[in-house]
Image 1 (cartoon, helix red, strand yellow):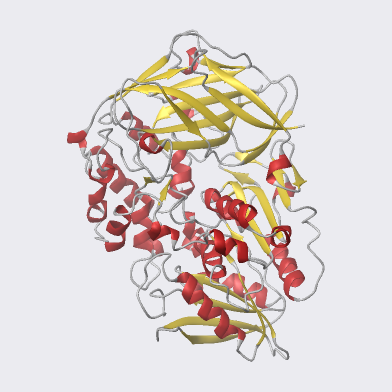
Image 2 (cartoon, rainbow, N blue to C red):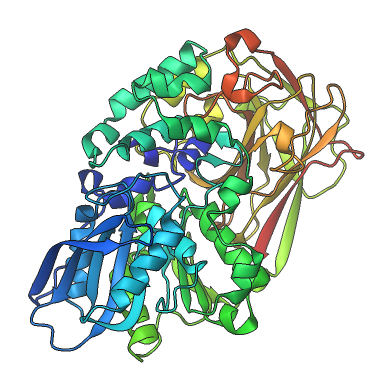
Length: 600
């Protein structure tokens, strides 16, 4: 199985390794997406079209047109580092449905000139592509974009430059530099080098990228030999200036800020926008960040024309949904025809067609369990109630068979739950390497804690209950090291003893208060850790189901290893390792609690 979709022992690997695309799923690696249905119409093609940039560099495009095009039409373009050829099926589909479609290689990739530096040039170059396409005889002056992951990011990056002829965008699973790639919440991953190798040079490199045996072995080599993360590009045999540059920018800073819209740019945005993401989309944090910031800074008129679709999908599913995902099965209604929705959206915004019937309100979200689409006017009113469950235990809750409680009553036992995390132990990594095709229903993470975390269960729900939105977990922790990495998972345990993964969150302790400012932990002092970065999910919890909360130290070859020393994490090795003794407090003075958004 492609490791980008693997949700293993630490569910965080599914998020961290999905950061950008499981970003190349759309890039045609082993045709990870199903091809859209072919149109019955014939299509004409223009090969090796050169588009001049303001600095003299030419970008390469392949242009597809309806056969024998008689009148000027709107143009859709995909702007990609994955070589335009990998999107030919999409181009054929939309060209067969009344649009001109251009596949454009970003600077330095494919047959385009210049040098590729991820995320840096897309906004400016995309402006030039938009305006050049608008002036061609086959274009009626209206230009839009299609794509997800990197091609979702660059729609926002181009929009912030405000090309006059860009009339709408439809970003799916949009990566957000400095948030969910090249790190997620300031934790990097070996996947960074897998992706950089995929996009190295000018060729596609899809077979190398998709060689999961190689990449698993190399990440395990880094992990088992306790080598510094800064060496990983050399370990895989592809010394990378970009990788090293990213390591010089390990937190959100001005380098990443320049790649995405700022507050003033959000205020000026006026085009209709359709945002698409999924419950299990690795770039969901990016998609929601763009959406929330537009809701925060945009004008009332612009916000009214920004629609959001959230399906029960992984990263690839935000373009080609499927009924089954890593063991979870959904109803036929979940398989939304996104090509059709795109076409209807383009018809509405560029051809004066009717608004897509599916978009009944500004937010459409799929409720797993109930297996139906529901609608809301905004995120704030989507869930009108809240259920708070407090952590408690009668013994040390580090075993699934002797777990603690998630209870309605505040003020748990005075005793704390405690565990020891030694970064030099590798049993957890061995378990993490095992592929699990049913990882969203597997209970392996609970049974393979290796004494490096704590587990809590709720009572059975007295009635079916919809939980939709963003979960929040507040933990009071005390430790004896200046830093460490933590991950939390939330599951539903159904009455038939099966399980369903709901959501997760991660944290590097030094960034507990701010992702931009580090503050090392004060050993021996109880401190509050607020996990407010859970991914959105919507599920109807069955009557009799219980919730399972897992809190654990991150010990996996799928993330940059934090050796707990408080130094520069990327340069730490096993020689810097400090064993962490962690206590999770849940007494009256330190109320650790889980807050759940409830829909009544």
